[in-house]
Image 1 (cartoon, one colour):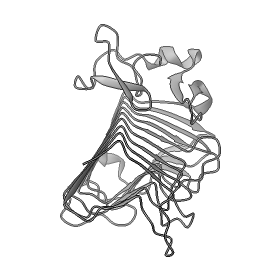
Image 2 (cartoon, rainbow, N blue to C red):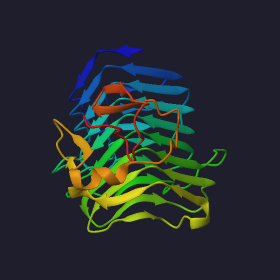
Image 3 (cartoon, rainbow, N blue to C red):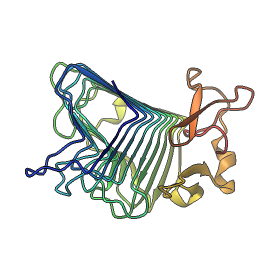
Length: 284
């Protein structure tokens, strides 16, 4: 276990340095930070990786092959209440794991970041995102926010993608929120708020619409959120013109019990109030 440690400027001559090069059979990271290196974490290729309340910022050599975090073909990666931002050309988060589960976390470019994907799962697998805030910036190296399967779906994996109660913002002009390749078993999109610039597509990549189940999603513009590009103080709450449209008549996921009004800070959802589309269930 790694707890309350900061890793800065991990750089080596071959330009593939890392704060942690995980080569064992599992790793847990808590309350830690990875800053300005060539990679935050590389690996593991087996076992489980758990990340809780940690920050990955400005990592990447700038060649597109180095990232804030690059998880190999591990069994499972679980991310909770963490913050990934401003990767340099590479991805803010990349996972080849059999199972990838991300909750209550922030993924951001800010106004001038150059990351490629906010979340990249190039070999598919079982992927679950809930309660996250994701923002692609205008200078991003790629026009899509989340990528699923573009390097080939890995044999032996179960290939499913589910997004529920996420707020996905793109201040990049056009592009797409999701890239999903054919071959995925199922895609479920529920109670997500998609807010873009110049009408990005909801999903591209060739996935059959027959594989996609949608319920209670809302599409709007990036300008309809309060401050979704502010790296130091992000605020993904809908502005007044939109907030009334986010109210749900039911509860899509009763197990969604806490949201994250600020990075690392979770709070219990008020069960006496109506649920809302998107990650935040009340104003920060």
